[in-house]
Length: 368
Image (tube, rainbow, N blue to C red; front, side, top):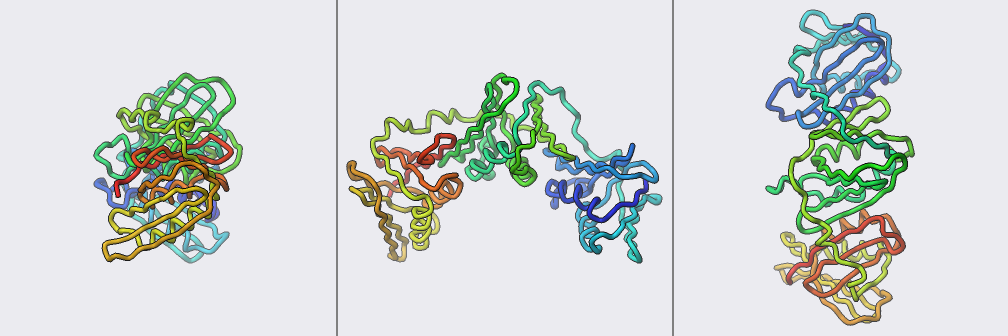
């Protein structure tokens, strides 16, 4: 295997896939990337056994072939070379040799035959979604995914597809985020899948915000997403996601509603959180006529108070929340004005954009 290419042309596919490479791997070969060159195309593959990324780039091959090399070292070598430098990559016996100008690097290789690639599964459902729309529903919801929860199905993002609608839902049992987006093309039969946390994080990194069409292929245990010069494949979490719709308060039943400037409320919560209990992060919200009072305290008897003027004429209410959960929801809310839907001190708070209904955030209350 041998080819000569500009530094940037080799660095781009390496950087696209390196996020999947396991640093603390159980198999040494998982620290490597698979380089495969044939028919004028160089493919770079990385995997952690749950997720696989394959980036491709066109270039002239002096000799075709395939091998695996340490991913981190090859990326750092390419980064260290001057911009616009030519790089010659060749395999000599059981070593990979990288040459550029007067620089020469020799890397250990492992056999390409031992690299664990995914077995392609037959696609059952296929749909095309604008790249920016897919990125948007992920960005609006991913923060609410659980981290290392024993309920493994919460450590990922639920994607529901039905007709011409794609819905993303995430929850850790204490809060929930939901976002919807429509797509054109043929209607799709109802399908639900749970993408693991790492796959969601990588997708968010890889997706752009444009309108370029992205093809999604759904197999029994995999989801495959084709981007320009990149193929993303992830195994799915096998489990039943909770019936999330049961925990979303019905807006029409919430008799206490207020519209407030999202950034103004977020800043007030951030100020009050400075003196909240480090462990429980509790904050008390007191709602009165045209006034919202925020109070946080800690075991050292320190206290923070803040008041905001709001357009509200209903009954008074006192309710407690984890302040971090409220801030996270407001950080993700895609609107200048937020609408808060409340019922009583033991019911969850529903947060939506004031003028739209394409995303919903739910935060469970705390006992104070």
